[in-house]
Image 1 (cartoon, rainbow, N blue to C red):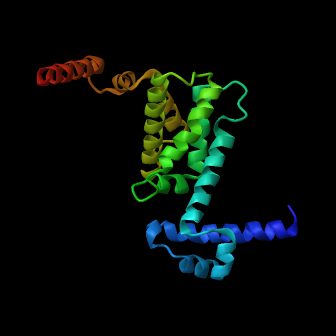
Image 2 (image 1 turned 180 degrees about the horizontal axis):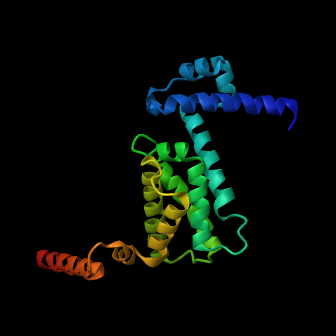
Image 3 (image 1 turned 30 degrees about the horizontal axis):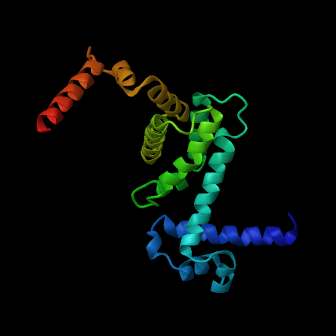
Length: 212
């Protein structure tokens, strides 16, 4: 990278940093180009050399995060396993949690979770040789990815109350071993949660049948 490229990258990053500093306290529709440039110490003309508008800055931030996921979660794994994939994703989230947790929160981008899933879905199919034409796999991946993103965001926003290795192991256990078996493992009383869940399911099915 030559001197000009370094200056260009520095200017862009300063604008992005200023945007993010404001975005942490304000919704995207409340942020102006003027506010970003004043905080960064540039004029509006400099801003428009790099970005079309405020939403373009947000898109830049999200694309950088998605590239991090693509580069560090699956790519490069010679013998991918679900446990390793989960560990890598948790590490990426932990290192950039202030970005992920805000973008995935109610105040963030409602489409960002879908963007992450759209990035991971084809990589997972390729890494584990999953067929493209099985709708059941689509549902399974949607369930797993949605559950993972929601839970890891909950973990981060609650002060990372479990060590990173422990939350990674817990999520792996739930996704690979099943939620019911994980709940039964930690139940405080001698209960058979799987039977309770089956009872609820049977009761729901019978109620639906009566309505029909």
